[in-house]
Length: 240
Image (cartoon, rainbow, N blue to C red; front, side, top):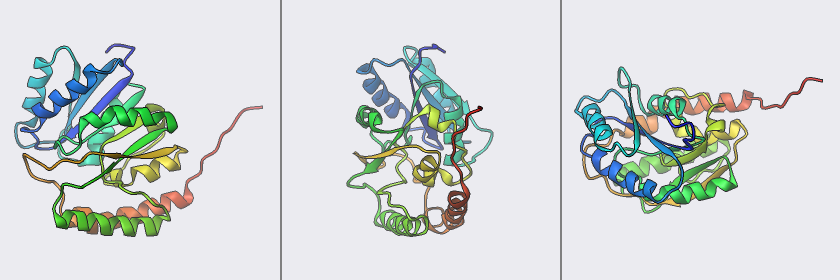
């Protein structure tokens, strides 16, 4: 790994064999116009199709890019896959985006520009290209979350985010808590900026989310985060 690496792009994936080649070509286009030394980290979250094999082939084909492949020993979910990528990242700046092509890699430079204003930039999906049920469940979940946590975020479900690695190193993720990343970041003293990004329809594969894991299941996580927020302390100390 080049010690000068300054940008890490983390792509968690579960059964996204058809989308990965297209996604990497788009990421390659974006990186071609950027001066940073970069790496792309694919994280296979225990896929049951040929996702891992596709990742390894892409690593061989795109030798002009630093592509790393991490493989989890089971399907642990998005939070675990993101955590594995974050902990492995070498860059001072870390980008996360979904492998399903609904996040647009061409939005990455815009988010990086806004990183000057804070410690993390989260994407806000405009003109959501999702089903009515998916959008409705997100709207209900967002309303409940904001009410319980006494916060107001426009879109916490967008995986397209940019972080300073220094702030990620302070944060501990648990299963399912990727939905509360803006809150967890603020708990660690991060300045969080919201930026509108493009959203595209899914072309291949199936959504991994349904009513249970988007609305009912995360309720227990919500109250866990409220407990953490109420009891969290953030201080500076120096020895005299």
